[in-house]
Image (cartoon, helix red, strand yellow):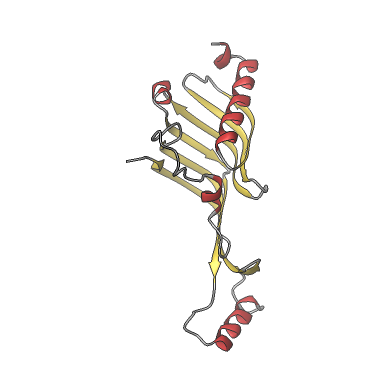
Length: 195
């Protein structure tokens, strides 16, 4: 009760969450404050997760969620009635590199003990309010074109008449897709389930 119903207890729990989650990802995890009755749910404010170099992956002004304690005891992260207020998501795959999600959450192929805490992540009834989503992926001109034709396509794409969402980056080029003011309701988001 002390941990779930007092400011000091919630602050201690916030620190524990940052430590546990931060220690299980290859990145930097932050929670500004934690509220709510932690036996049934929580409100997390000023949440962010970046890669280890500080490049953005996820941030939210506020995350409200409900849960039951019993699945946690079975190492399952099951949440429901999740509300994401102004989430910012950046999915970034550089040319010749891995997607930032895969770098931040690497799969452990050497673990012999089987699935563990975080192997099951399920969110039901998720509401997104004023989301901002960016996806960057490798881009290259058609490989069947001659080198000269490819150079022309690149020059056009990067020029004033070309697509403003193509940019030169280390190792090549990226195509960006940006979605602003995203509102939506999702009945189920299953992020992990070792079947």
